[in-house]
Length: 263
Image (cartoon, rainbow, N blue to C red; front, side, top):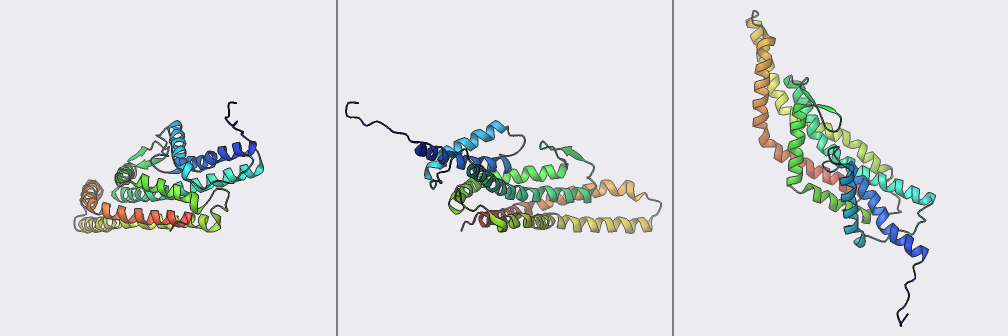
């Protein structure tokens, strides 16, 4: 061959090369399908797969070398399941973070009497109009502060703290994900409680008015006034959304770091 050495590709080298890109692709793909914004039902599945593929091509060369495992074996199937669970758990943490604002909008809508004003969410769930408003607001803030870049960086870090072929999340990780339910309700109440208190005072005033003037139909007068006061109080309370969003996002990122064992 004119002095040139022939390139010998063995089965072990081929398996190592494929695994270097396959295992990160599985975890990143599961993460993109579960995380908010990118994983929304409005984003086509092909787009999410393409984003996962491009991200894998970029980050795979700098990741630790995965173990050499036969791609057609029980060990490979277990590794795929482990990687999918890790990616979906990380995406679920971010979903819980955004559902804080959806739940807060649900609470406020019920208190204002807008519980019947529901609309069909593209994800297939019927939510109130205020929940859609808070969700869109939180999504725009998430993108404005480069939250998507932060979580992708944590995804890359997870390959060091939770290497491919390792032990996975473990019971503590799944317990942490389950415990975020109480955190979600607490944060939603922090957003909705000022409006709850203000509307309680308004309703007490209507109750006193009904006692002093029984001939006035409190339902006819009270509902539009409660709605107007509620919208006004929402407008006043928008000033506190950004500090609350910053605080909740920091806590959500901290949960994500604890989940993957990052410092």
